[in-house]
Amino acid sequence: MKDTINKGLITRRDFVIGSAAATAVLVAPGAFASRGGADTIKVGLIGSGGRGTGAAINCLESSPDVVLWAMGDLFEDRLRGSQEWLNRDLPKMGLGDRYQVTEDRSFLGWDAYKAVIASDVDLIIFATPPGFRPLHLRAAIEAGKHVFMEKPVAVDGPGIRSVFESADMAKQQGLAIVAGTQRRHDVAYNAAMDRIHDGAIGDVTAAYCYWNQGGLWMHARKPEWTDVEWQLRNWLYFTWLSGDHIAEQHIHNMDVCNWAMQAHPAKAISLAGRQVRTGPEYGHIFDHFATEFEYENGVRMISMCRQIDGTASRVGERLVGTKGTSDANTVISGENEWRFEGDRPNPYRLEHKDLIDSIRSGMPLNEGRQVAESTLTAIMGRMAAYTGKEVTWEQALNSTEKLMPENLEFGPIAVPPVAVPGKTQLK
Image (cartoon, rainbow, N blue to C red; front, top):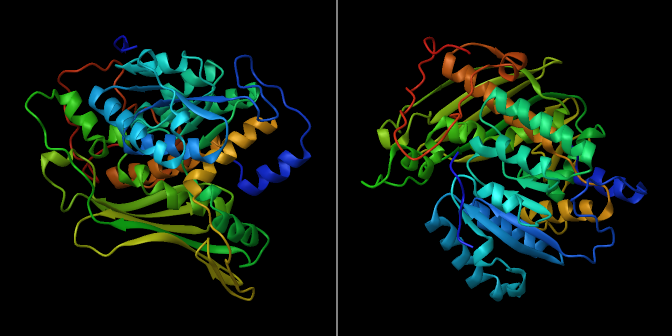
């Protein structure tokens, strides 16, 4: 990649219990070492689009003595737009002093992530397109940094294997990794899941999950954009960047089912396609998936996701057990009826609070393998959909198909052909 241009598997409940019981943990050299919470945590943001900017705000508002120290992005308009947003809104929230990014800690270019990592930060927020996540995560962990990374965390089997390695490395070094699967930090989901794991609905016999909605944003191509820039600015529609929407968006719901099952599926079959979003402006991804996953114990998860305007919306999960049912967060019906009551703080803020609390307590959370398994669940479903084949966990994990180009630069890049079930082959 080109040089940087420098313009200057654990639950919230597990963490609380574990922190109370812990006495100490070794922390890697260079990692944030404060135990009492008095020292300031410096945060670096890599990927300053809407989600990245939102994640930075959530991080700053979640905990005291946290400052945004450095920022990086490939595109200057994204970086400057984010900085304007932060300078405008943080003072209104009483957090104006938390923005400490200077011009010499504002980085542009393909290697901006390296410059942010090297800028004396303690914690990195990764919010670039998911295809970059394995590379960026590895660099942060090797540099001794704690990490918050948005989901999904890879787009192919080689990327998942890299994330597994980085997660294990982080564990060895005492570094924290928290992922943007915020339902894992939602107090209602945790309260329901505690009861489900304690047997409130009996043995889980079936799981259902959905993310059906209308279409999302698309940026019309500008004449001055190269192929690479056009695809990067519309990263949702290219599997090498997003993993397709079964991974980029629907991962949230599949992650809840994996959490309930305390396992990942063993195989998948899928019916899916590209029915409505057929124009070249929508890249080559599908617009709907209906997938059956099967766990090792024979339980099946039915998964549906769709991004088509004018269609019915449904986002959520449903678990069926031998003693009842649950939506996995607010209601349990059957022999042990229950309904969530009480305050439900913003989980987008709580995931950052849990991360920072874990660092300061000396019990760093590590969700790296957990989120990688849910990401691979989605990748396995996509592979089954694209090929029309039954795909096993081992086939998805050990796939040799590497979607990310080895050397990226602005210029031409072909759009991969739309997959055709029955013709597209497993690799």
